[in-house]
Image 1: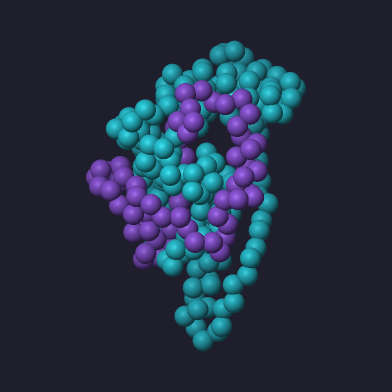
Image 2: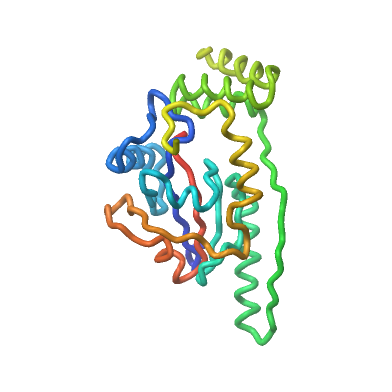
Length: 171
Length: 63
């Protein structure tokens, strides 16, 4: 997509699930240091932009932990998703690049509002999510998410995550 | 508290509802502000990155 004039950045926010391995930030220096570790761990090639300590940009866009937006050169939001989803981003970029082509032709382009309810598919959501939390944040991050899920979604949902954590040898 | 030391028990649902209800949507002006570029430590406007073409902004952290 870079060859077609599309840029991509990663905007580093607060730690969504702080834990022993990725504690909450207490200064911008702290935040920059953890962002560097994150870059090295995942070998991220895109530019990483670090939001200020209190997250003004993260909050202005909606405060979700893993959202994605596409912004036009004119500074308008063209696409937003509550969860990063490569398939719909790719589709949206193709669609938006086609709009740009139409604008360059003699056609009149009339924008309209549109929404899409996305989806995530996992073989084993509980195990995948718990493994990620253990690797990124540590045991605290995993335990706290189990407790939060039991509170918001009920004891059965919490129990599913608890069992996945035990299966990973960290219960 | 933005940089909470522990994941709040009841956080997620409220934030996901607010994203749908009150966060800027498609067609709205994209919020701008300053960021620190990790590779150079230089402070830039986020809008510097969308001036020349569409910009994909993925938000996230280690966890």
